[in-house]
Every structure is written in structure tokens, then in C-alpha cells.
Length: 327
Ligand SMILES: Nc1ncnc2c1ncn2[C@@H]1O[C@H](COP(=O)(O)OP(=O)(O)O)[C@@H](O)[C@H]1O
Ligand SMILES: [Mg+2]
Image: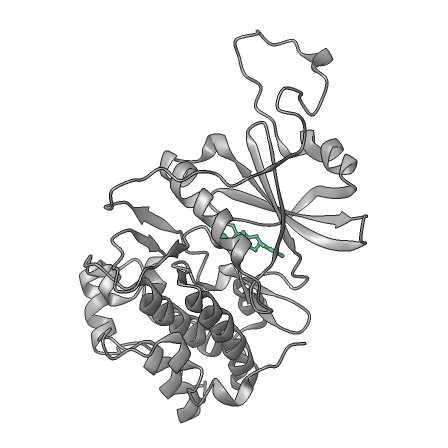
């Protein structure tokens, strides 16, 4: 019914140069993962390394990387499963080829992803275990979600029953409220960036996060159009914390109806009018309680001044009854 939604970013803010946080190197800077004995290329041509070149380096760190099939992929990354033999746990490794990144992603978004993600420790946020860098690759080792992402889940299983979806919403809202309490906005909330674990869901993909100072509006337009709040589509400065709330409202809608409320193929101004008038289709076969409907409607409040914050959303009738207490 719908596909993965491409993230876009159009930078209108002045650039600044962020510094990469400290990194653990997989190999010493000068040495290559494989000895260059088999090199036949000219000296001037730098070698571009692929994931299989790093299996041995991971093994030296006690990790067995399974490159036979990907857990998933995004615009700039491929995600693989691995076993960490030092503690017997499964991990997911996000592999990013720096050569493929635009300079904005490389110098601004990726450093932010790593530095903010390191600060986030919550049961409903995918935890970052470690970060490695080698040649043209950056690897981010994180908690492994055995059930894949939420988009795939809905594509395979159809819409999610309202009570189960309410539990998921409540977990995601707790994760989001935690991020916001640290003044960090996600800015790319969508089904494919939510990972399913055995007993819960977690927010993931911090590729567009940013630190938000009080009353500071954002001018960098990022995220996916069909999940974007009206103020973003209108191209006016926006409060990224409140636009996260809108996007999570869209996630709630999609979970229970198995369809997107707004078609991203339409021009922005058309989508904005549909958003203003709440013109979306809930299939007649889907029964929704008023608690469920009024909750995602509250998150998708057109007027940003009246939209609840993530903290206020914790009391919404579809969310409050399902609060999960994690050990
Ligand atoms: N921890 C994880 N466990 C299982 N699958 C994952 C995990 N992290 C990511 N994936 C899969 O990989 C895809 C891409 O990861 P993501 O972090 O969203 O990368 P990108 O920033 O390139 O979009 C996800 O949509 C999901 O299918
Ligand atoms: Mg993603």
C-alpha cells in the first residue's frame, strides 16, 4: 500500500562545522583491514572498501558480522546483524560509507547523530553500544531488534489492533518525551525508523536529530513529507519538538488504519489544506474508539500553538492507560 518514505533535507540554516566525537578505530589509521599483497591497482587510485573487507577486523574485536543478508537499509546506510562473542549478545551494525555522504550529512548530520545518540539511554530508544571507524566506513553497533522495523511489520501483518497499537504509542511517546526532556528533537519519525523488539518498540535512526534551545526555531527541513507537520511543509520556521509530536500522530494513524493519511505525491500546499481540514480516509472496515481517534487527532493539531507537547501527550486517552513500566 505504501513504500519507504525518502528523507529529504534542504538546508537553509547557516552551516557550522561540528566535530566528530572520539572514535574507536577498527584498525590503526595507517593499516588496511587486509594486507595490500593482492593490490594490483595503480598507486594513485584509493581503494574503496566494502563491508566484507571488515569481517576480519570485527572478528578481532570478538564480533561475528553476518554480511550474507541485510537487516535493512536507509539512504546512507546498510544494517547488518552480528554476534558479539564477548558477551554473547546479538547486535545490529549500521554501516555508513562516508564516500557516499553529501558534505552536509558528513559534516553536520552524522556528527550530530553520533553525539546525541550517545546521550540517549531509555528503554524505548534503541541503544548505541559502540562506534568504529575504518578507512571510508563508520560503523555504529546498537541493540538488535529481532522483529525488524514497524513498516515491515504493518506491511506483513496489516493494521495493528487498537489496544496493541496503543501500547506501542505509549512506549514511543515515552521515548520521545525522554528525548525532548533532554532538548533533543528527532525530526524523522516514521514507521521505518521504529524498531520492534520482543516486548516493545523503540525509536531509532537519529540521522536528523538536533539539540533544541528554548524558543529556537528550526529552518532545516528534514524528515519525510507524508509525516511532516504543516508548519514544515509551509516552509516557515518550526519548533522541531512539536513537529515530532505531529509525526508520531501520523505513526499512530498508520498503525491502526494501515494507510497513510496524506499522499506525499501531492504538492505541499495541497497537503497542507488536507491537513488543515483533517481530510484523511479511515477505511470503513476499521473501527476506532473515540479515545484512539481523539488522541492521534490531538497530536495532529494543525495549529502548532494548540498542539500538545510530548509530556502533555502522555495523558492522552489512547496513551495513558497503556503506560509500560520497564525494569
Ligand atoms: N537495531 C536494529 N535492529 C534491527 N533492524 C534494524 C535496526 N536498526 C535499523 N534496522 C533496519 O535498518 C533500516 C535502516 O536503518 P536506519 O538507522 O533507519 O538507517 P538510515 O539512517 O540510513 O535510514 C531500518 O529501517 C530497519 O529496517
Ligand atoms: Mg532510517
